Length: 104
Image 1 (cartoon, helix red, strand yellow):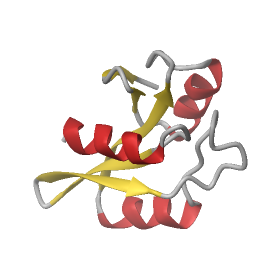
Image 2 (tube, helix red, strand yellow; image 1 turned 180 degrees about the vertical axis):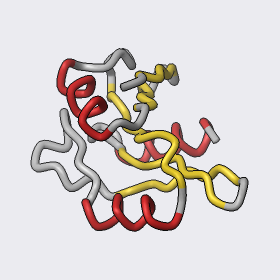
Image 3 (cartoon, rainbow, N blue to C red; image 1 turned 45 degrees about the horizontal axis):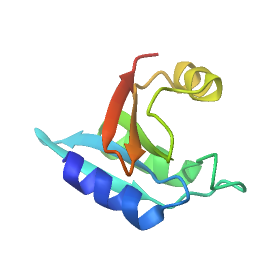
Image 4 (cartoon, rainbow, N blue to C red; image 1 turned 120 degrees about the horizontal axis):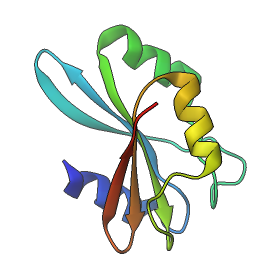
């Protein structure tokens, strides 16, 4: 699944990529979402309707986003937003292809 996430980060670069890892019927899947943030170079925002849709039909295991030409450590904003939604963040760095999981 990380290969799919890194590919999505590559396609979005230099903007941040965002998505969800969901579990449905015992299977995990990466859902690449459109970034609705105004400043896509340093922020991400998943469409609230998309987020709610996947909350209703699956278990959201991770909120995923990328940091381009930066490390994958969560920013203070990432930490705050992660705690607010109560779902772990999986943050990938691109192009160096590292990742970190931040728990709320």
